[in-house]
Length: 247
Length: 336
Image 1 (tube, rainbow over the protein chains, first blue to last red):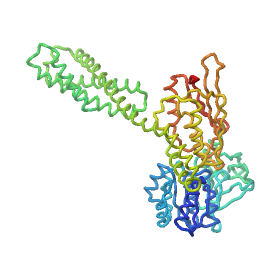
Image 2: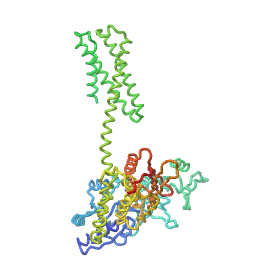
Image 3: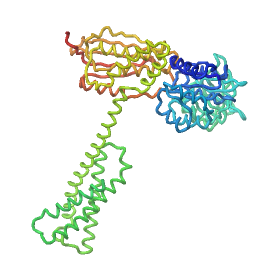
Image 4: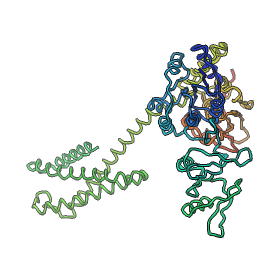
């Protein structure tokens, strides 16, 4: 079995490697020290099981799991934690596998043998019950089987077009775009503090507005820093754009 | 509460019946009538206060007190008027025969006003007392939690479990550190200890955390200006370091640094002041982790116990650096 161990503490990872080797000599291990690395490792190595710490810098375990669930054939995920009062209650109520550190060998063995795959409903509930750590710092998209992340802070806007939502973002200084599966409505709700809806088909980053221009035909166009073309502001959303620009 | 109102009302009725010395025959008749009147008043007032509750509960205590009292008086007036009218209608004039309408009303308001004020005061004090009991039992628990962050305990245990296999000597040392730290934490730390001891304990703590965080945690001690025998409340610095790690170091992939600095300010005309500041690079992560504010309020409380009015802890953030600064009067252990 190929097992990915995700934990920001080297000692914690070391211990798991020892335990897992004792359980089965043939186990293969890969390690990651935060959520971002975990996703990279899943892409490259396609592990069967992920042992995922919850609190980690960069990207926490809950968010990483959220992204991993978007892969066609996600690995089974077992959460590990030293102490998380609220998260534990949520795990109990959703019957999600979790291990408490320091982890017992027997308990680990049992979890490996019986681990079932998480489903999205369980994960959604976990998020609802752990708002403090359930925010996303990245948006994920799947391209040819690999998961690919875009940091929220690099995003200019989300544009809806027929069936899909396109995200336009800054990729090391170059404007790039990709198609994602989220809906504009859910994105608007999730990132209400940093993004604003300006049109039925557009959601933009608030702190990136450059200017509001009136066109000859009466339409209002919003210019964003770093984005060559202006985006149309609908009459319905005009007042909220104006209000934002005044402050 | 309603039961208490009924009892108070009935006691009042008894007092009013027994008070006059000269109406022996009618006493029990009067008691019935007076009871009826008082119970009506008491229960109606309670009812009105209950109905008022949602509207006034968000205002200040003074406002609540005055408005409750006024509504009680208003209810009394209304009921007195009603009673007077009914008694005239049915010609129950035994009691009121000698009194005029206005006298009756003034009489009732005066008695009701006094008893109402007493009753409200009684309920207020009882309420305060209950709050105090609740707060006390809560503080005890919080006090313990302010001293031990469960995270720290379990993470350290995990480090030890891991080190036992690979580096038993380090595991041994960490266990000793942990024991020493917990011995101090679990003591009722109402005492002052020397700076050198406090620094030693803090370093033990940092030692443990360093095993876990490795290179991510770096700390500098710029505390040469603090005399070794300066006295400070036990475990004043450790919780602040814990906060710094929890909020500043752990959420960052590359970690961060903590600087502990201290100075002895004896330039002022007043008594010399000891100033210890702990600064850490603050995490720029989107959402701050929920910490426990309990550590801070616990420190504040302990500073107040030892140096009432003379010591303080302040926190502020500047250019992504978080500062916690403790100032207290300088005291020192006599040289041995």
